[in-house]
Amino acid sequence: MAGIEPEDQLKELGSTLAGIEQVLDLDGMRRDIAELREQSADPDLWNDQERAQSVTRRLSYLESELGKVEALRQRLDDAGTLYELAREMEDADARKEADDELAGLHKAVQQLEVRTLMSGEYDERAALVTINAQAGGVDAADWAQQLQRMYLRWAERHGYPTEIYETSFAEEAGIKSTTFTVRAPYAYGTLRGEHGTHRLVRISPFDNQGRRQTSFAGLDVVPVVEQSDHVDIDESELRIDVYRSSGPGGQGVNTTDSAVRITHIPSGIVVSCQNERSQLQNKATAMNVLQAKLLERKRQEEAAAMSQLRGEGTSSWGTQIRNYVLHPYQIVKDLRTGVEVGNPTAVLDGEIDEFIEAEIRWMRQQEAG
Image (tube, rainbow, N blue to C red; front, side, top):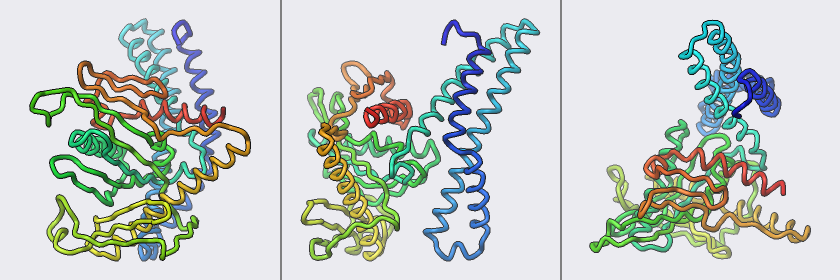
């Protein structure tokens, strides 16, 4: 916004923030927070662990969101004061401090604005993420494990709880597949644009001739099912296998056939869970994962049918979406939004917000168009 006076920029940011506050409904958030605080103070709440965790997660999220908006509004007010002081004192250092804060405010308001774009039916749900190694042999298995770490680090940076349901380790290195949840409000709306194929180009650490290798891993993101969801599953259409957990685990995890694999024969969907000691617990969790995948499949089929009725072409986000190039140069580029980052190390350590924010805007444009 070069050429526009700082005061005018602050006014524009204030107007944008006012629009965001209206969409987020701050008064409604405050009412919800008061109600959730009352529920969390009920000593009987923890008799139902799942409900208690849902209440406390929702309360923590709303308090955090409200705090962000209120802090941003205060920063905007303070920035105006900073410019006034810098002008009165004719202080170059104070002016630079105010300019730096203005740049930070632009970024913070843009990030908050992205949240208002998530209005899909399931966007506010937690996310169920599955990563599969694809073409590329042992390099692809290693790549799938790097992606798992990238998303878990991203969640950790944001303070989002995660739970790994199942990891199938490859023989030489890396993983064949993994399934985990990100249990935070709007995790699905935030991550759903990551669905698709991720391509890695690098010098293979597993090739004794040091040749360049291209590897692929697929990412699937679906919303976590809730009690209000209804998906008919005929038990006769399921094949249920039990087996011994593999790979690293706590004491006793590999000593019994507690892991469960469920195959939904009509669709070919296979889900597994091995994170619990109890076979019954693993089966219940695997059924929840299967329900989530069948619900998403049903939603996609309905969306495709509606598009066909309207005479629209269907768009798929399940194709290659991002390149991670480590050799001969270093860059990570999203093929849909054009966002490029020249520091793959930071990206693979979980710094992916720039990609996520751009793809949320891109998806909103695709859906509106």
